[in-house]
Amino acid sequence: MKRRVFIIFSILILIGVIATGSLSISLVRENYIDNIEKRMISNARLINSFLTNNINDSIDLNEIAEQYAQEIDSRITIIDINGNVVGDSHANIENLESHINRPEIKKALGGKIGISQRYSNSLNTEMYYVSIPFEQKNSNIAAIRLSLPLKYINKYTKKIYMNIIISAFTGLFIAIILAIRYINKLTYPIEQFTKITRNISKGKYGEKVRINNDDELGILAESFNIMSMELSEKIEELKNSNTNLRAILKSMLNGVIALDTNNNIMYINPSAEKMFSIKNELVKNQSLFEVIQNRELNNALEDLFYKDNKESIEISINHPLTNILKVYTSPITYQDNPNRKIGTLIILEDITEMRKLETMRKDFVANVSHELKTPLTSIKGFIETLKSGAVEDEKLRDKFLNIIDEETYRLNNLIEDLLILTDIENSKNKIKHEMINPNTSINEVIEFLTELAVEKNITIVDKVNGNLPVIYGNRGWFKQMLINLIDNAIKYTKPNGKIKITAYNVSDQLIISIKDNGIGIEKEYLDRLFERFFRVDKARSKKVAGTGLGLAIVKHIVIQFNGDIKVKSEIGKGTEFKIILPIRNK
Image (cartoon, rainbow, N blue to C red; front, side, top):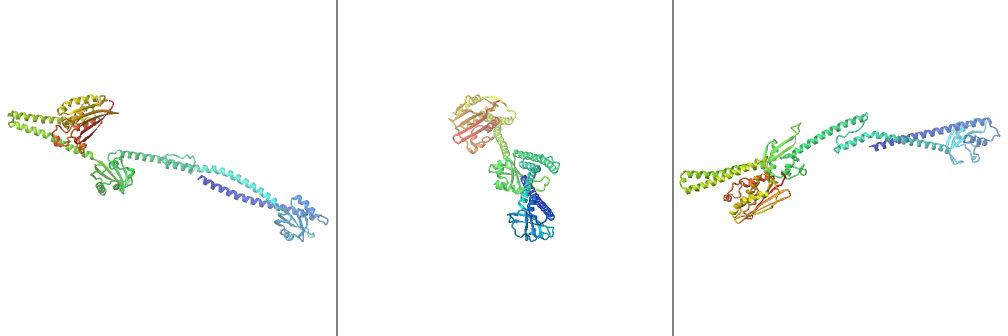
């Protein structure tokens, strides 16, 4: 902009200087020629007056002309009535032909002052001529002509031209300097506005224009600064609001999907991304029904959209993950115009774990009821049998009492395991932090269960590292975890089998492995092993004493130690349980 203003300003100044210079040169030249003309006429009249007073037959007109020509610096020519030259200051070069046809002579012979400008063949140059009629009537002289070479006039006017041009360009130079200063002062506020607005477009809000003028630009700058500050505050407020909103949406456990009026995705939070294995950046502005290719879910959503209310549905999906979802929909409207709908909000609540827990609770109640009812029914039956007279038969009585004792022992074990499990689950906020020596605890458990293993002719192979680091936690639970796992291995390993116990530490983890070569477990049941009362084969499990809570107790103890448990098994080859516990300072 500054360049354009400068160019326009310079062109205007240049046009003004050229126009003024041209007019000045023309005016000066005209004035100069007019002055020369007047001077030549005046000189001619003086010569006319001299000749009128001193004319006689003996006077030498050439000498008179030459004398006066030197004084007035002009050529003097005296013409008779026939147009012939009778006297000339340049007699040696002037031809004697008649001048009767010369325009200035014609006028002079006609009693008028004649003026002309033409090329002189005798002098080979452009000349300026002025002729006046001779005043004495009875004389042979008709006119006196003065001439001056135009080169003198041109030389003078050229000098004037140069002076005017120098003056013009000097003025132009000064005007340009002043113009630059004025343009800089004029365009500085515009440059400031341009710079600040460019910065604002790049996100640098709140910048101010530094202009102290009292004119309209100053008022504009003040208004602009107020607008910039308010814009900065609004943008910051919107940014904070948007950041908080996105943080809230990202932190939500429920999936959130925002759709526009065409059911294209405007936003999807991380929870929903995880549910459908998609990314917000990749699916934005795409149709929801094309992204989520689940016919049952899409049909349910279309039904909810059609109803256009806040109802919810519960639906199971099998891709990409198997989940049970509770789906809520709600229209998105403007706060100041609730009747104008701009989209739909979908909230997806994953209730898979809730339904699993409900199922587990029902199964748990059913299993506990079954596990309690069976021995109680058995005990009750035998007691009634004894009451009815069997007590008199000593052999039969002892048999029934032994069965009652076994069922009572079974009930006691079941109740103890339930109490242990309840105690572990309710001790999350009051965990003991005792110092546990893994070597000592493992040796004690092996020694405790060795007799049971010997009874089945099972060998326990001890491959425990003798220098395991100390860990912290509930020592009783740690031993209970080992007892349950080794006891299970003994129960489900055939005679002459082998159980290998390995323990070592890697970095900050203690790893304990209990591996047997027993009957093994089908892969389809591995994920449910740690559920309460879950039995792989109930018919087979009845032959093995147990409450069905041992592995559930192990799982909860591992969780209390902030550890992890993994299981690998193969039918006919055995099972391996691997416990990974963190090693931490007290």
